[in-house]
Length: 183
Image (cartoon, rainbow, N blue to C red; front, side):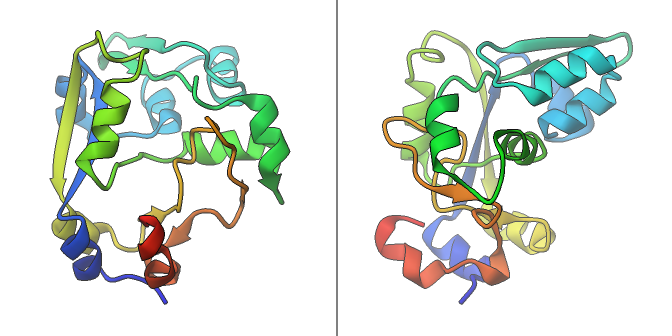
């Protein structure tokens, strides 16, 4: 059980992250940040912070800071609340959103990235696409990386069951069992 950085990199040599088109300068300055970390950095007031984290974002949220500039937090349109609530196991809707908002997400294959970039909401927009070396990142951050067997921010067309155990550390992830299904 589990997967090593080299095993992961052998099948998925690159990781992909799509960000808003004008976000490169901020990423260079601060690194890739979760929604929660962006709100902390930008010192977003409590009421706006709560509305950004506690509910499903039906549109992108622009935040601004006099020192850090501007950042865009993406929407969560593929996450349909009624479907999500029906598939959650051992956690609430709020707990699930908190887990999602505390993470930075990567695609393991370019095809999945392309699907996202071609989605109705994003196809006419400019994006920053980061292509990272899986082996290097996994070696450096192995203890922080968690894997999931699905797109955890999507419930379309089908809401796969998910809950507190959906995300697993690399050492605990059932890698060989998942290979036939595409990690």
